[in-house]
Structures are given as structure tokens and as C-alpha cells.
Image (cartoon, rainbow, N blue to C red; front, top):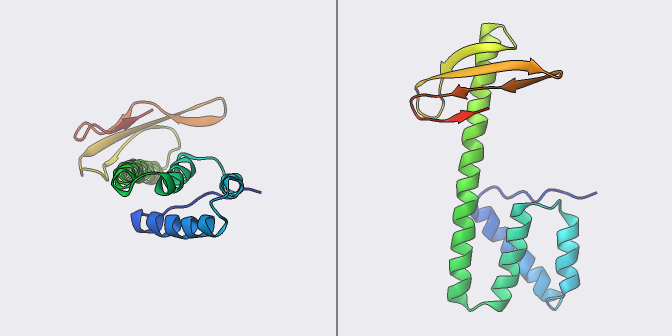
Length: 144
């Protein structure tokens, strides 16, 4: 069974890269070791970038490697921020529906991103709940 490569933050990313690089080095930079690493974890963008950085660390001059590392870390942080914001909104919406005592319809709540008044809309279709037009007019966050 495969596991998910969990990276908490940039420090964790760097630490795991260093450990993996040392292990790969001890295995004489074997491509089989990289393939085993890739097969151990569930495929993901994090895993793909992790392997890309391992290979780059071995092949690229340090200056080029640092530029690639900086770009991948920046992308990682941006994605983590987006996911964190989405989860905050979903939690706030869920709480608003609970407080209103309904499972579908329209509710307002305080946007956790900007403090404005946001609207959440839910409807049931095909046995599942869906959002439609949920948004915050103040900061512009929206999802369907």
C-alpha cells in the first residue's frame, strides 16, 4: 500500500530532501532507488517536485539548483496558502449551515479571509450536496 508524501512546510521539505539525498547517495545514486521512492508514495505534484529536486541537486550546478529549489518552494507555499484558505471558507460555511439548522439553501457568514459578509449556497442533486454561487463580495473569493 502506498503512502502520501506529507510535507508540512519549507523546513520540513528541506529536511526530507536532505535525508532522501543522503540515502540516495548511499545507494550510489541508483535509479532503482528513485523508482522505489516514487512507487512507495502515492503519485502527487509534491512527489514529482521532490524527485525533480533530488535529481537536480545531483546534476545541476549549485546556483541553478538553488533557483529551481526557490521556484518549487514558492509554488509549494502558494498552493498550501490556497488550500488553507479554501478549508477555512468550507469550515465557516459548514458552521453557518449548522447554526441555521439547515442542510441546503442560502446562509450568510463572516468570511474567514477578510471579515466581510459572505454567502454560501447549497443544493442537493443526485444524492449529494453541491455549492452554487458561494462567494464573498468583499474579497472576491468564490466557489461552486
